[in-house]
Length: 339
Image (cartoon, rainbow, N blue to C red; front, side, top):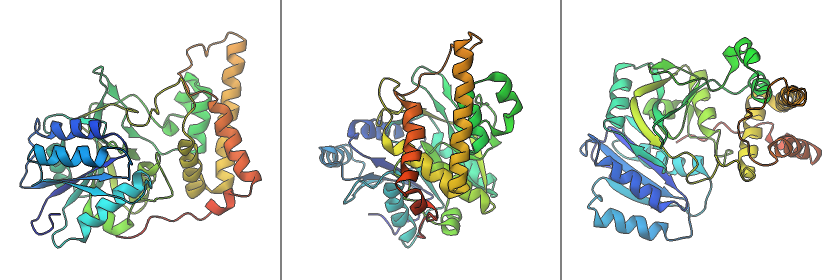
Protein backbone atom coordinates (compact mmCIF):
# COMPACT_ATOMS: atom_id res chain seq x y z
CA UNK A 1 0.00 0.00 0.00
CA UNK A 2 1.29 3.43 -0.96
CA UNK A 3 1.39 5.79 2.02
CA UNK A 4 4.62 7.74 1.65
CA UNK A 5 3.94 9.81 -1.48
CA UNK A 6 1.34 12.54 -1.28
CA UNK A 7 -1.74 11.79 -3.39
CA UNK A 8 -4.27 14.56 -3.96
CA UNK A 9 -7.21 12.16 -4.32
CA UNK A 10 -7.92 8.56 -3.37
CA UNK A 11 -10.68 6.82 -5.31
CA UNK A 12 -12.53 4.04 -3.46
CA UNK A 13 -14.46 1.29 -5.28
CA UNK A 14 -16.31 -1.25 -3.13
CA UNK A 15 -16.86 -4.63 -4.75
CA UNK A 16 -19.20 -7.46 -3.84
CA UNK A 17 -19.38 -10.19 -6.45
CA UNK A 18 -19.13 -7.76 -9.37
CA UNK A 19 -15.50 -8.10 -10.53
CA UNK A 20 -16.36 -7.67 -14.23
CA UNK A 21 -17.97 -4.31 -13.48
CA UNK A 22 -14.97 -3.19 -11.42
CA UNK A 23 -12.58 -4.16 -14.23
CA UNK A 24 -14.61 -2.16 -16.75
CA UNK A 25 -14.59 0.78 -14.35
CA UNK A 26 -10.81 0.58 -13.91
CA UNK A 27 -10.34 0.41 -17.67
CA UNK A 28 -12.25 3.68 -17.99
CA UNK A 29 -9.52 5.46 -16.02
CA UNK A 30 -7.20 5.15 -19.03
CA UNK A 31 -9.72 7.03 -21.14
CA UNK A 32 -9.64 10.04 -18.81
CA UNK A 33 -6.97 12.61 -17.99
CA UNK A 34 -6.37 10.74 -14.73
CA UNK A 35 -3.05 11.94 -13.28
CA UNK A 36 -1.15 8.92 -11.94
CA UNK A 37 1.17 11.15 -9.95
CA UNK A 38 -1.67 12.69 -7.96
CA UNK A 39 -4.21 9.88 -7.70
CA UNK A 40 -4.57 6.46 -6.16
CA UNK A 41 -7.34 3.83 -6.36
CA UNK A 42 -8.31 1.33 -3.69
CA UNK A 43 -10.66 -1.51 -4.59
CA UNK A 44 -12.25 -2.94 -1.44
CA UNK A 45 -13.60 -6.47 -1.75
CA UNK A 46 -16.26 -7.17 0.88
CA UNK A 47 -15.51 -10.88 1.22
CA UNK A 48 -17.28 -11.74 -2.02
CA UNK A 49 -16.59 -15.44 -1.65
CA UNK A 50 -16.44 -15.91 -5.41
CA UNK A 51 -13.58 -15.36 -7.86
CA UNK A 52 -13.54 -11.59 -7.31
CA UNK A 53 -10.28 -11.42 -5.39
CA UNK A 54 -8.39 -13.58 -7.89
CA UNK A 55 -9.85 -11.87 -10.95
CA UNK A 56 -9.13 -8.37 -9.64
CA UNK A 57 -5.62 -9.25 -8.47
CA UNK A 58 -4.81 -10.80 -11.84
CA UNK A 59 -6.20 -7.83 -13.75
CA UNK A 60 -4.27 -5.27 -11.69
CA UNK A 61 -1.01 -7.19 -12.14
CA UNK A 62 -1.54 -8.07 -15.81
CA UNK A 63 -2.50 -4.50 -16.74
CA UNK A 64 0.43 -2.92 -14.92
CA UNK A 65 -1.81 -0.90 -12.58
CA UNK A 66 -0.17 -1.90 -9.29
CA UNK A 67 1.63 1.45 -8.95
CA UNK A 68 -1.69 3.28 -8.53
CA UNK A 69 -4.31 0.58 -7.83
CA UNK A 70 -4.45 -1.78 -4.85
CA UNK A 71 -6.90 -4.41 -3.63
CA UNK A 72 -7.98 -4.50 0.01
CA UNK A 73 -9.93 -7.57 1.12
CA UNK A 74 -12.32 -7.52 4.06
CA UNK A 75 -13.28 -10.32 6.44
CA UNK A 76 -17.01 -9.92 5.92
CA UNK A 77 -19.62 -8.22 3.76
CA UNK A 78 -20.54 -5.38 6.05
CA UNK A 79 -22.14 -3.24 3.37
CA UNK A 80 -21.29 -0.12 1.38
CA UNK A 81 -20.43 2.13 4.32
CA UNK A 82 -18.36 -0.63 5.91
CA UNK A 83 -16.28 -1.12 2.76
CA UNK A 84 -15.76 2.59 2.20
CA UNK A 85 -14.80 3.12 5.83
CA UNK A 86 -12.04 0.53 5.50
CA UNK A 87 -10.50 2.57 2.68
CA UNK A 88 -11.10 5.88 4.48
CA UNK A 89 -9.07 4.61 7.43
CA UNK A 90 -6.25 3.62 5.10
CA UNK A 91 -6.33 6.94 3.27
CA UNK A 92 -6.35 9.14 6.34
CA UNK A 93 -4.20 6.89 8.50
CA UNK A 94 -1.03 7.26 6.42
CA UNK A 95 1.77 9.78 6.73
CA UNK A 96 0.54 11.83 3.75
CA UNK A 97 -3.28 11.70 3.65
CA UNK A 98 -5.00 12.85 0.43
CA UNK A 99 -6.80 16.15 0.03
CA UNK A 100 -9.90 14.36 -1.24
CA UNK A 101 -11.50 10.92 -1.18
CA UNK A 102 -13.80 9.98 -4.07
CA UNK A 103 -16.39 7.22 -3.73
CA UNK A 104 -17.08 5.47 -7.03
CA UNK A 105 -19.53 2.65 -7.66
CA UNK A 106 -18.28 -0.47 -9.45
CA UNK A 107 -21.08 -0.07 -12.02
CA UNK A 108 -19.72 3.23 -13.35
CA UNK A 109 -17.66 4.30 -16.35
CA UNK A 110 -15.67 7.52 -16.13
CA UNK A 111 -15.97 10.08 -18.88
CA UNK A 112 -13.00 12.23 -19.84
CA UNK A 113 -11.98 14.60 -17.06
CA UNK A 114 -14.59 13.35 -14.59
CA UNK A 115 -12.28 13.20 -11.57
CA UNK A 116 -10.11 16.20 -12.42
CA UNK A 117 -13.22 18.36 -12.91
CA UNK A 118 -14.44 17.55 -9.40
CA UNK A 119 -11.01 18.21 -7.91
CA UNK A 120 -10.74 21.57 -9.66
CA UNK A 121 -14.25 22.51 -8.53
CA UNK A 122 -13.41 21.65 -4.93
CA UNK A 123 -10.14 23.59 -5.12
CA UNK A 124 -12.08 26.65 -6.25
CA UNK A 125 -14.88 26.34 -3.69
CA UNK A 126 -13.36 25.78 -0.23
CA UNK A 127 -16.77 25.98 1.47
CA UNK A 128 -17.95 22.86 -0.38
CA UNK A 129 -17.38 19.65 1.53
CA UNK A 130 -19.03 17.13 -0.80
CA UNK A 131 -19.68 17.21 -4.55
CA UNK A 132 -21.15 14.76 -7.04
CA UNK A 133 -21.05 14.10 -10.77
CA UNK A 134 -23.71 14.08 -13.45
CA UNK A 135 -24.79 10.47 -13.96
CA UNK A 136 -25.48 9.34 -17.51
CA UNK A 137 -27.66 6.34 -18.34
CA UNK A 138 -26.45 3.67 -20.79
CA UNK A 139 -29.11 4.94 -23.22
CA UNK A 140 -27.59 8.41 -23.23
CA UNK A 141 -30.02 10.05 -20.83
CA UNK A 142 -29.28 11.78 -17.54
CA UNK A 143 -30.33 10.52 -14.10
CA UNK A 144 -31.05 12.90 -11.27
CA UNK A 145 -28.06 12.84 -8.93
CA UNK A 146 -28.72 16.07 -6.97
CA UNK A 147 -31.43 15.67 -4.38
CA UNK A 148 -33.27 17.15 -1.42
CA UNK A 149 -33.23 15.27 1.85
CA UNK A 150 -35.98 12.73 2.49
CA UNK A 151 -38.72 13.94 4.84
CA UNK A 152 -42.29 13.01 5.81
CA UNK A 153 -43.65 15.51 3.25
CA UNK A 154 -41.44 14.06 0.53
CA UNK A 155 -42.98 10.68 1.33
CA UNK A 156 -46.47 12.14 0.86
CA UNK A 157 -45.42 13.38 -2.57
CA UNK A 158 -43.84 10.05 -3.52
CA UNK A 159 -46.94 8.13 -2.53
CA UNK A 160 -49.42 10.40 -4.29
CA UNK A 161 -47.65 10.85 -7.65
CA UNK A 162 -49.82 13.93 -8.28
CA UNK A 163 -48.46 16.84 -10.31
CA UNK A 164 -50.36 19.59 -8.52
CA UNK A 165 -49.21 18.28 -5.14
CA UNK A 166 -45.60 18.08 -6.35
CA UNK A 167 -45.83 21.75 -7.35
CA UNK A 168 -47.21 22.68 -3.92
CA UNK A 169 -44.51 20.64 -2.19
CA UNK A 170 -41.73 21.63 -4.55
CA UNK A 171 -39.34 22.34 -1.69
CA UNK A 172 -39.79 18.75 -0.49
CA UNK A 173 -39.52 16.86 -3.78
CA UNK A 174 -36.47 14.63 -3.38
CA UNK A 175 -35.49 14.23 -7.05
CA UNK A 176 -36.41 16.87 -9.61
CA UNK A 177 -35.46 16.97 -13.27
CA UNK A 178 -31.66 17.22 -13.67
CA UNK A 179 -30.17 20.64 -14.29
CA UNK A 180 -27.11 21.23 -16.45
CA UNK A 181 -25.69 23.92 -14.18
CA UNK A 182 -23.71 23.38 -10.97
CA UNK A 183 -25.80 24.06 -7.89
CA UNK A 184 -26.04 23.38 -4.17
CA UNK A 185 -28.27 20.55 -2.96
CA UNK A 186 -28.90 18.45 0.14
CA UNK A 187 -27.19 15.29 -1.09
CA UNK A 188 -25.62 13.73 -4.16
CA UNK A 189 -25.52 10.16 -5.37
CA UNK A 190 -22.80 8.03 -3.78
CA UNK A 191 -22.18 6.48 -7.20
CA UNK A 192 -19.69 9.30 -7.87
CA UNK A 193 -19.07 11.53 -4.88
CA UNK A 194 -15.96 13.41 -3.78
CA UNK A 195 -15.36 14.35 -0.12
CA UNK A 196 -12.92 16.93 1.24
CA UNK A 197 -10.58 15.42 3.84
CA UNK A 198 -11.47 17.95 6.60
CA UNK A 199 -15.10 16.85 6.29
CA UNK A 200 -14.13 13.30 7.23
CA UNK A 201 -11.95 14.61 10.07
CA UNK A 202 -14.87 16.78 11.18
CA UNK A 203 -17.87 14.43 11.10
CA UNK A 204 -16.18 11.01 11.07
CA UNK A 205 -16.75 7.93 8.97
CA UNK A 206 -19.89 6.74 7.24
CA UNK A 207 -22.55 5.18 9.47
CA UNK A 208 -22.32 1.41 9.18
CA UNK A 209 -25.88 1.11 10.48
CA UNK A 210 -26.76 1.45 6.79
CA UNK A 211 -25.97 -1.76 4.93
CA UNK A 212 -26.76 -0.42 1.46
CA UNK A 213 -28.63 2.72 0.33
CA UNK A 214 -29.31 5.96 2.24
CA UNK A 215 -25.74 6.06 3.63
CA UNK A 216 -24.74 8.87 1.27
CA UNK A 217 -27.94 10.75 2.11
CA UNK A 218 -27.02 10.52 5.78
CA UNK A 219 -23.38 11.49 5.19
CA UNK A 220 -24.14 14.55 3.05
CA UNK A 221 -26.80 15.70 5.51
CA UNK A 222 -24.38 15.34 8.43
CA UNK A 223 -21.82 17.37 6.49
CA UNK A 224 -24.40 20.10 5.82
CA UNK A 225 -25.39 20.17 9.48
CA UNK A 226 -21.71 20.64 10.32
CA UNK A 227 -21.55 23.74 8.10
CA UNK A 228 -20.27 22.27 4.81
CA UNK A 229 -21.99 22.76 1.46
CA UNK A 230 -22.97 19.94 -0.90
CA UNK A 231 -22.91 20.60 -4.66
CA UNK A 232 -23.80 18.91 -7.92
CA UNK A 233 -21.22 19.44 -10.69
CA UNK A 234 -22.61 18.34 -14.10
CA UNK A 235 -19.34 19.15 -15.89
CA UNK A 236 -18.05 15.93 -14.27
CA UNK A 237 -19.75 13.13 -16.19
CA UNK A 238 -19.95 9.47 -15.23
CA UNK A 239 -22.01 6.72 -16.84
CA UNK A 240 -23.91 4.75 -14.22
CA UNK A 241 -25.30 1.29 -14.89
CA UNK A 242 -27.66 1.77 -11.94
CA UNK A 243 -28.64 -1.48 -10.30
CA UNK A 244 -26.23 -3.59 -12.35
CA UNK A 245 -24.67 -4.98 -9.19
CA UNK A 246 -27.79 -4.95 -6.95
CA UNK A 247 -30.84 -5.23 -9.23
CA UNK A 248 -32.45 -2.29 -7.41
CA UNK A 249 -34.02 -0.91 -10.62
CA UNK A 250 -35.91 -4.06 -11.43
CA UNK A 251 -39.65 -3.87 -10.99
CA UNK A 252 -40.09 -7.54 -11.73
CA UNK A 253 -39.10 -8.77 -8.28
CA UNK A 254 -39.34 -7.74 -4.66
CA UNK A 255 -36.85 -5.16 -3.46
CA UNK A 256 -34.14 -6.42 -1.14
CA UNK A 257 -34.90 -6.14 2.53
CA UNK A 258 -31.82 -4.01 3.18
CA UNK A 259 -33.37 -1.09 1.23
CA UNK A 260 -36.34 -0.99 3.60
CA UNK A 261 -34.03 -1.44 6.59
CA UNK A 262 -31.91 1.50 5.45
CA UNK A 263 -34.93 3.72 4.87
CA UNK A 264 -36.29 2.84 8.32
CA UNK A 265 -32.92 3.53 9.94
CA UNK A 266 -32.58 6.89 8.17
CA UNK A 267 -35.97 8.19 9.29
CA UNK A 268 -35.51 7.05 12.87
CA UNK A 269 -32.02 8.52 13.01
CA UNK A 270 -33.07 11.95 11.74
CA UNK A 271 -36.76 12.20 12.71
CA UNK A 272 -37.24 9.69 15.52
CA UNK A 273 -39.66 6.76 15.73
CA UNK A 274 -42.65 9.12 15.58
CA UNK A 275 -41.16 10.71 12.46
CA UNK A 276 -40.91 7.31 10.79
CA UNK A 277 -44.57 6.55 11.37
CA UNK A 278 -45.56 10.08 10.32
CA UNK A 279 -43.64 9.52 7.07
CA UNK A 280 -45.27 6.09 6.59
CA UNK A 281 -48.72 7.54 7.29
CA UNK A 282 -48.26 10.36 4.79
CA UNK A 283 -46.92 7.94 2.17
CA UNK A 284 -49.93 5.64 2.73
CA UNK A 285 -52.30 8.61 2.49
CA UNK A 286 -50.69 9.69 -0.76
CA UNK A 287 -50.85 6.19 -2.17
CA UNK A 288 -54.51 5.87 -1.15
CA UNK A 289 -55.37 8.99 -3.15
CA UNK A 290 -53.42 7.57 -6.09
CA UNK A 291 -55.34 4.28 -6.00
CA UNK A 292 -58.63 6.18 -5.66
CA UNK A 293 -57.83 8.27 -8.74
CA UNK A 294 -57.09 5.07 -10.63
CA UNK A 295 -60.44 3.54 -9.65
CA UNK A 296 -62.29 6.69 -10.69
CA UNK A 297 -60.29 7.00 -13.90
CA UNK A 298 -59.03 10.40 -12.82
CA UNK A 299 -55.39 9.76 -13.67
CA UNK A 300 -52.67 7.68 -12.13
CA UNK A 301 -52.52 5.27 -15.04
CA UNK A 302 -48.87 6.08 -15.75
CA UNK A 303 -47.66 4.80 -12.42
CA UNK A 304 -43.88 4.25 -12.42
CA UNK A 305 -42.81 0.64 -12.13
CA UNK A 306 -42.34 -0.45 -8.53
CA UNK A 307 -40.93 -3.65 -7.07
CA UNK A 308 -43.42 -6.38 -6.33
CA UNK A 309 -45.30 -5.97 -3.04
CA UNK A 310 -43.65 -2.60 -2.45
CA UNK A 311 -46.49 -1.14 -0.38
CA UNK A 312 -46.75 -4.26 1.77
CA UNK A 313 -43.00 -4.53 2.37
CA UNK A 314 -42.70 -0.83 3.19
CA UNK A 315 -45.59 -0.48 5.62
CA UNK A 316 -45.76 -3.95 7.12
CA UNK A 317 -41.98 -4.05 7.55
CA UNK A 318 -42.00 -0.96 9.77
CA UNK A 319 -45.10 -2.09 11.65
CA UNK A 320 -43.54 -5.51 12.26
CA UNK A 321 -40.41 -3.89 13.69
CA UNK A 322 -42.61 -1.82 15.99
CA UNK A 323 -44.63 -4.81 17.19
CA UNK A 324 -41.44 -6.75 17.87
CA UNK A 325 -40.00 -3.84 19.87
CA UNK A 326 -37.02 -3.48 17.54
CA UNK A 327 -37.64 0.14 16.51
CA UNK A 328 -36.56 1.40 19.91
CA UNK A 329 -33.16 -0.24 19.46
CA UNK A 330 -32.66 2.11 16.51
CA UNK A 331 -33.70 5.14 18.52
CA UNK A 332 -30.16 6.38 19.14
CA UNK A 333 -28.11 5.43 16.08
CA UNK A 334 -24.39 6.15 15.94
CA UNK A 335 -23.18 9.06 13.84
CA UNK A 336 -20.29 7.13 12.33
CA UNK A 337 -17.04 6.41 14.11
CA UNK A 338 -14.07 8.72 13.88
CA UNK A 339 -11.10 7.87 11.69
